[in-house]
Length: 530
Image 1 (cartoon, helix red, strand yellow):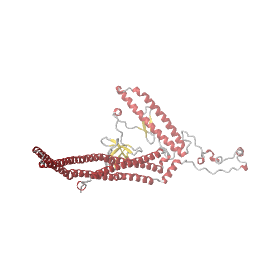
Image 2 (cartoon, one colour):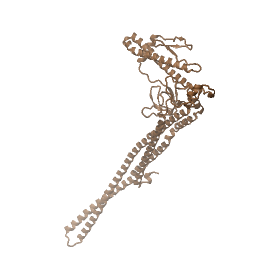
Image 3 (cartoon, helix red, strand yellow):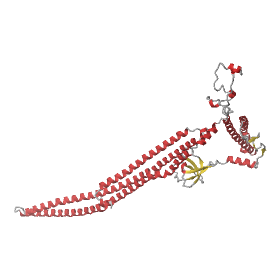
Image 4 (tube, one colour):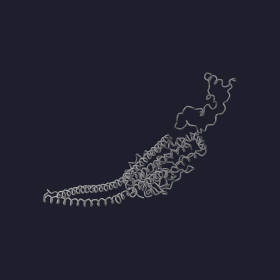
């Protein structure tokens, strides 16, 4: 069944129906846009929430960072950030695949419908014009036939009139004959116009309008089919990210299962154990026997509190009841023994790393100076004197600090095997020598000096290389990479990780051909280099 056959006389109904159908598409597009605004607002609020509580995190040196409950909360915040990214992706895909696509298709349908209605209007106007011509010829035929009848009656009357002359009779007959001929011509014209109109009317109702109505029917069916596909996309868009949203929720569950109360308890003990021994019993002072009379006499004026009665423990800090914040000292003497040892060891490690860095700098400056001396055109050796001098001073300063903290650590009494923080000793030129476990010097195997110098010098003048990968990742899902700054990937593709996720849900990666860009962190499994 088609509109051209069944609805041949319902042009107005067809016009209203097709217009209503286009308005439904517009309404659906508006509905989807408002839905995407809700998704974007929701994602923004989730990101702000995650950021708000991430900002309250302490730095990695804070004690709480080692607690599993604390780290699990951080993991939850990261998963919520990834979840927000998936809500944004839903909104973006709905805009691209539904709103933009349907809006473009709607404009095409409007233009096509306008063309068909214009064709119908032209056909209607053509039929009406032919009908007007038919009506005019009919009226003219009617008018002329009446005039011919009157002329014939007048000629007959004149012929019977005995008073009329022969000339009057002849004239009346000629007039009647002329009117009859004109009426016959009008009759023939009317018949021709009627035949023409009937033909056009048949063409209009059986060919032209049914064809136009069938075209409008096809347009409407295509609109309905496209709209139905848009309804399906509304669901599929969210279904496509459900696996990733599920992984985010699994990550939150995993964060909860990773909480270990026993481990957190051990961390608290390790971080806060003072190392003090419990105070011993307070000795009884028998004033009735005259013992320590001088001490008792001097103490009669002021009542003694619990801390004054510690006896032999009087000289020790009673950490259990200490309320006032101690004055921070460079040797960490304000801390309990156990905590002091840990802080001193950590400080020694930092100084050793800094000393190693300065030693490497000194060695590099020495090599560069040798290059300049052998090749004056490359630079003036004297220009490096200031840097070499500054580096030497830094090395001496760090040596002094290293010795100072080693002394304090020795005084603190490190338990078990004492770590050797002097991993390297430095000669006067800034070069370093490796110490063997027993403290004896062992010479490092040194490559050809000229080769080492020129190799390092060449490295300094080479073009800057791209950042070295810090790991690799494998794509779990396809990602189109349509936004600026992103890169596409296929499921199972392996990419090099250049920059970790900084909390915004995106990781920077590089392909083997050098292409770089960002991808959603939740779309890949990442393995960082150790």
